[in-house]
Picture 1 (cartoon, rainbow, N blue to C red):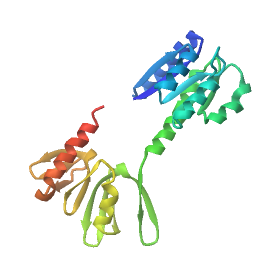
Picture 2: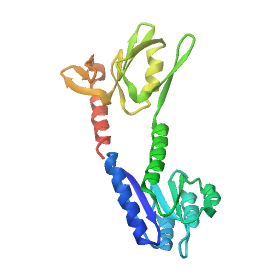
Picture 3: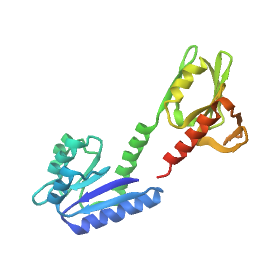
Picture 4: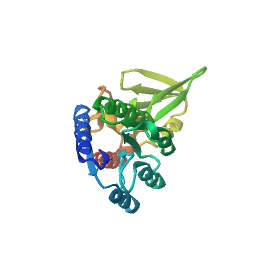
Length: 241
């Protein structure tokens, strides 16, 4: 869930933006919590004490406390929050860059332009959140998203990776070296002396075997069974949000 703060002294505009955000969230299968502030000074006071949001949609020209001043308060305690400025004039566009704003929209707000900016911002968020593993081959390297790895298997002096697109490949490496890199990520667990799996792809656990989404049947050894089951229950618990 992403939290949004809309601040504009014009109540009609805040309601229009709220409706546009609700439509965007619905169409993209997302959940937004949306808070509206029509008094910028109250928002400023609240932010200086405790309130914080993932996204701020701020009118630049407001009585008492303007959007640029609010952005200054935000940046004092949050460098990652996304700021979208609203204004009826383009004269403040240059000033907005001081606060690393994500977008600058001219009133009246065109929902399609707002959606285009949100698409770009969420694409950036997705790319930043994608963790990768860089693997070295004899004459090249290959970078793969960590969450695409279904399993890793030890094969003598090689390691076999199986991906979620049914691709698989081997590299010359020690299993312990590759394991140490994968286990840093919460979704991975060792289940056998020769296997590490991505718990996101577990379909079912049958006795001493783990069936993965790609129909692999991975043995669960007694050596790792207790630790794996504890890790799996904890991981499932972390997904309940």
